[in-house]
Length: 142
Image 1: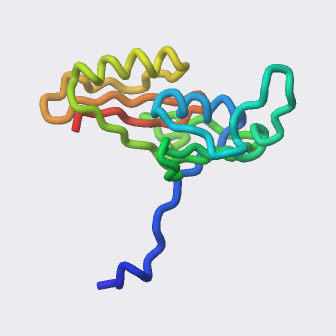
Image 2 (image 1 turned 90 degrees about the vertical axis):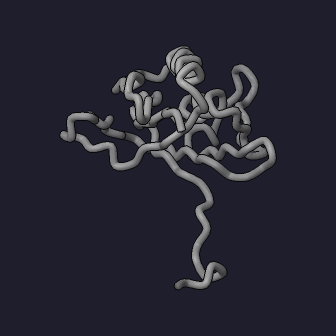
Image 3 (image 1 turned 120 degrees about the vertical axis):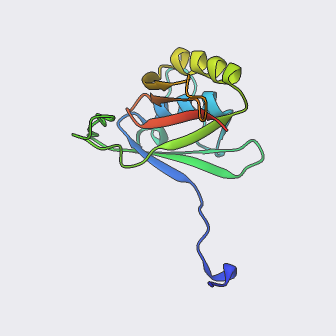
């Protein structure tokens, strides 16, 4: 058994993307997160140097959750076909099928895309989406 004091702690999940600001905004709105101080979007017509490099989202209480790293090119996963595997995905939960339906509408309104639908599964209803950069994430009842 490893002493819990000696193991690393997960700090945040980092997603590569070709438009860090847009992807951060998608997850900020969808998950109710806030920007790390200094990472907020600039005013209209102002330059956005941070949005072209690295952005961090936190919980409203300040705990780090997600970061977005700008890259020049990012091949989109083809999942469920494995020509370009998903490599990583996020699992998000809701309390009921009704809430899953509500979140479905929110995902689509924010620009996400449905990739796989298993809402009728009696054991684990879920839907898999792609975010604006093509990263897959699941929303399931659990």
